[in-house]
Image (cartoon, rainbow, N blue to C red):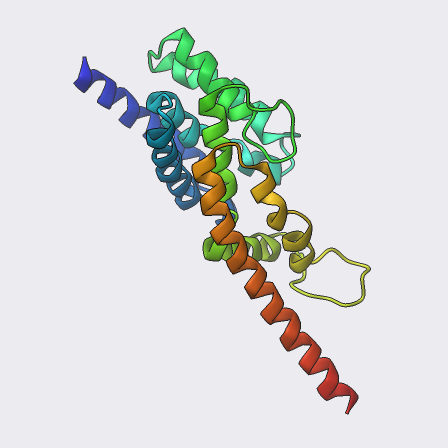
Length: 212
């Protein structure tokens, strides 16, 4: 039975990876793998169901490419429904399918529904943690580049990567549901704040040089 479960999870991994052949670098398969590792780390600390957490991590962004291409309206709800077909085809139990579907539907920042289970909270925390710290900064600029968002501007008439960090990323620590995630978020948030302070300091220095 254990080997059968491992084979099923391997098949799930292979099925999930097929959805990430044409996505932006900030939501690619490497992002999925990082979220999986962090989610399992948090699951171990909180005694959450690792099977549900792992499956949810592997499938949570399968609709992201479709959303970015305008093929669907919202990737979390689409992924939650599509995951039911995938998990059913692979022979997962109905209880696991229902749990994973909720994990996926509830993972997205500032979108309903709220995560109601421990597994959903763990996945939400892991996904949000990947948007903080050094990796989060790299992802933020990669996403901005893919979607035509400028890095910095003082004009105030366009949304910039810096605006995104200030308005969303630096508030992610308030969205963490588990204590281990909050501790990690605090450390990573400080790094992002220091980075933005340095960027803005350099921009002020350039403005002063232009004015002299």
